[in-house]
Length: 358
Image (cartoon, rainbow, N blue to C red; front, side, top):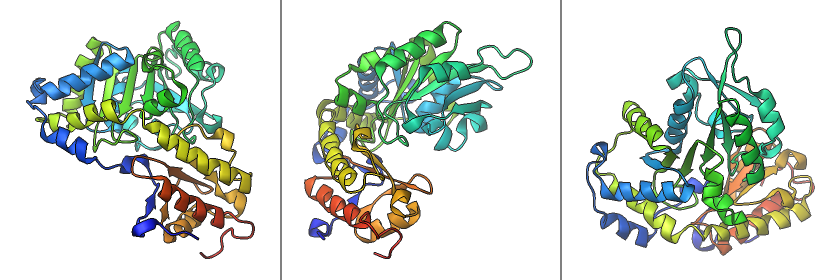
């Protein structure tokens, strides 16, 4: 079996592992900066204006992390004692450490969704727009696109439009967790503004597939962004000469957006081969962007053991639960590393290998 060339490891734990390219580093060094707490950093302002324009919203605000962008977005919709609802695999419910409850007193409910795919009828049926004195009132529905734990699932824009129509009729907001919305845009050709029109607030991440070292952006109305600026400062997210970081995001949008198609191509290559060799583990038709979620239990593995065995062979992944292992392609994974990862995965998934020592 082929080992990683030149001793490199195929690190597929997350697309957050990307490192800034030399050209991006130069852009950061050359950035004009100011004090962003006073809204005086010109590079940050340019980034915010660009993202707001791309998403079709009035304004935007640069954030240090995607979790902060999401949590401030939720707080714009819901207050203490109200609820947000989303699918049971949603990042805001599973991977943000209960922040909505801890910081904002917001409760949550969910519905079961296959691969995180949005079903409008189910979402609307779960809502309680006005619970009165007896039930918690729903203030916001959260949609994640693409869907992380669903395996990079793209939410159909038609379903998102129908959801927005249904929620608007009863005064419920929609927040789009678009950490990987760039991937959905590149994979489908759907304009980013079309996705943005389906939500009141939208968060997008710069430090995943786009390759910036840090940062997310929240887009919304000008009034909401004014409130978000206060909430950001209150949460400790007020930053000063942060144009150095915003410059990386601007560079990424200009030079590294369309290259996401390369990540999708490499992921599809592995998906087809794994699906052919181990069809119970993965249906390649379910793989739409840069993420593979393998049902390794179907091949006799526990997810932790599988990740450990792959790691010993130089292929790093992430166990999403007891039976599933996730692998995410990104800027720092090339064709040779992809082939190395494929060799290792196919070997471990071969009949009779489940749970065996590597």
